[in-house]
Image (tube, rainbow, N blue to C red; front, side):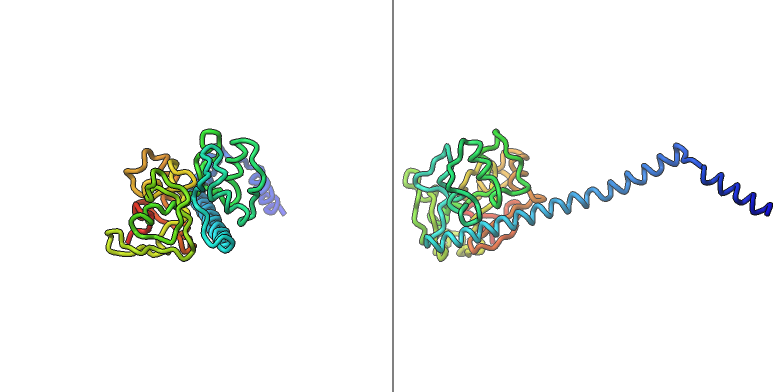
Amino acid sequence: MKKFHKRTTKVGIMKNHLFTLIELLVVIAIIAILASMLLPSLNKARAMAMKTKCTGNLKQIGTGLALYADDYKHYPPSKTPDFEPWTNRNNWHWLVMPYIGMDAATRPKDWDDLAKRRESGPLLCPSRPSVNRETRDWYSYSMFGFGPLVAWFGFGPAPMTKGENDKPSIASFCPLPTSKATKTGGTGFLPKNSTIAFISEATQNADSAFQGGAQLGNELGNITDKATYEYSYRHNNRKNVLWFDLHVSDVGLNQIHNSGFLKQ
């Protein structure tokens, strides 16, 4: 009984033992180390989820474009003849909205309302910087105007919808689903539809449309600053592209030709 009493006393003393400051610091240090090891993995998983959502957006846009083409027998142009630079209501974003579950019939109340509606739903990349007054002209996605392909690679049929000084290379075209390149454009090969960019995450200097690689940000020399590059290649230095055959994949820097197709 006496020995048992002594053991009970020791256990009681141990139960009343408090952590020392050193022990607390050691525990905190261990937690901090584990957190620092886990945080990069969480950030990577979050970035991957956002890229997957962006890929899904482009696939939904591709479906909407196919439905539009089924109704009108051609794809919508990046800009229409009555394109309004101030309101931007007559570009492909608004034309495809009814086909991707968005309201394009209600006229926006003002510029802010218009920009918020255009940059929403499937038209908004989750990795895109937040929309504010200073970034109203920054788009998540831009459509190829197809001017360089028409001018130098015989891409067609693709009726012109908007031109500047009658120059096909900077005009906006509305191609057919059956349109394709018919000339090599001096490159020695015909760009396939599966390699022609249709909708892309473009740089800040592109609006609803882009004409070739410069506005795609495919050349580092065409990018004026780091922020512009990060805006375009927002998924771990890669960007998602909806190609003309309506499949989606990502590309890295300098993989797209200046005429808007994947380099061979």
